[in-house]
Image (cartoon, rainbow, N blue to C red):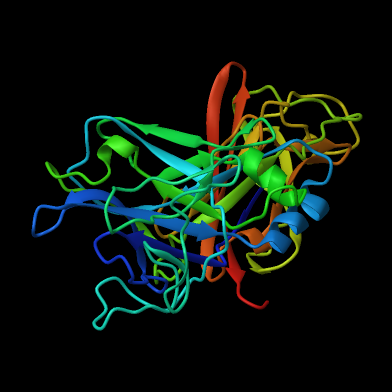
Length: 370
């Protein structure tokens, strides 16, 4: 498939409220601007990193020479007192950091990894608060509680500030395009220390409302971990001697769904398509056995069978269905899906001017370790 996901090698969040505390094993990672019990403004920021070798492997061996996009994704667990509209900001982190094994609110304070004031375990390697390298900055309140991470705003003339806007009744999930940073990580022209996710400066250290956005982290026990999603167009379309299906009353189905796949490798799903009521003709073979090509504007999607949420949504650029002389097909990378889950395959196409979503209950399970 031209949609592939990798999952974090580490994530945490840092909080000015507990400036030396680590939250590297928290199931929930937070962004926020809120007053503490003494009405002092506090801020939470997310740190998240994906493996350089995994990024390079996806681009070298799956994407190859295709043009791709890469997006940082987080699922919302809970939110409080959000403004009517706001933005989230994502930047590549400057400086390595330790994940740690702490949780927010640990007593005594856990100092095993990154915190508001320090990058490394054991209260070592403080985040820089002055004399920044070119293209690097930070944001914090003046006084003794300085820190909060360091990040790139640009590199070699490339803007590295990534944003997503939200309005009232948005889902508040995060899906931010970070392609430019991933390209630099892949080329080793920018050190991959992951990303920092934060509120705009004017909403941080808030004392008038408790703005909190809680997201599922890598240690969640749910099906909603963060992920970095790559998308590219891997489709080819050549009908050969096949006629293109145009009748809105048609039968479209998969021909080779085994129902169970290991969480590795690629599965090519083949499809059959024909009019439900073929035109009568004099022939030596059955018209019901004649395969047709789907229209070029046909797309596939995956839906989680239990939650009924779209895991891979229809995308006119990145989930096109291919065609060769044998008929329609598409590829799915099984190692880009979460194992021990059931997925339902859906097909979207337009026939005789009518757009339809085909659901023939084609379900498969991805099995861990085969």
